[in-house]
Image (cartoon, rainbow, N blue to C red):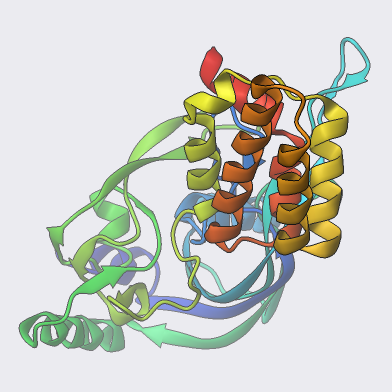
Length: 328
């Protein structure tokens, strides 16, 4: 199959380019078994295509999104057990805010100048509301020329990286979006819905893969729009804390954790450190001293990670839960 062959034969040789803006969205990565839910930093084929199919009522449509900028915030929520009628353990979700992205759509019919979509997780909480405004229509000849530009990046010593996630179906990644050569692919799985309630995981080409493709899909290595590109560092921090053997051997009271978290959140690291060191000096026995030194070590780890203070306080409040994650 030739690059862009399907786009030319079935979709009139055109891609519609839209500018997407969203105040807040959660793009569904998971920290398995954890209390923190990171968000992906890429707008995957399955998410944007699925949202467009629902909105437009068209199944024969393909789309990708390239996020250009975002900020990060956090949202705490507590899922409810519908059978027991009680809330479960509070969870924290990473939220992408003030999102701007380019969306490229292959459609057999004309598309409107503006679209309004809901994309990603927790739509019932108001996340994912997105407006799309058309920028231009890109012709297939322009896309072919841009593939040549990407080839020159590689010949000049650069590494052209895929900036989104696409299914490993030749008619999609090659026939519609013009990936002509995979130099160093990174594979993953992406959810592919077959109905509103069913679906399966499909082998896919992950962002960061080194490929030759039309320039709309490419970002040169080093051209990161946000220092948090890829998975958030918070899940790594939680995993590191959970692996600390001292944490597994220690029991904390809710009051101890809540007091330390409040001091850290309100007054910062230095005051929280003074608070713990004073308590260590006054410890009644070696066991209590050991527990406080463990807290001090974790506090230093949180501070060195440079995450938001509110997030650090949330982790401190849930240290007992994080410890149990590794005991199972």
